[in-house]
Length: 118
Image (cartoon, rainbow, N blue to C red; front, side, top):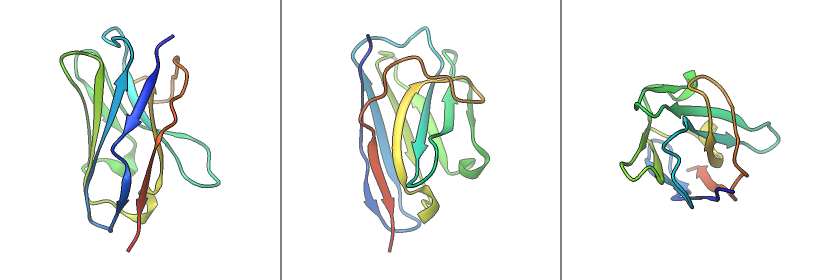
């Protein structure tokens, strides 16, 4: 079973940036991958997806601010987050996805906490 490890979270002021990483124990070259987040008291939501051919899509609330990418080893994925707002505060996870919605197959990792606060 593939293991996913998210990292790169932290505390940042509104308007700041963070780059999250997702490292996989095995290649995910055959899968559309995605980032998800879960804010306190809310359900986990799909945030962004990237296909094997690098097509991308985002939830409306992050369009123009977040960029998802996957490297050529097909074992690491990234989420560049710019112009962060307090509403982006959440634990961020990676997993398989569709280009438009949640579709997790692998076990969830521990996630990485992102806190946006002044």
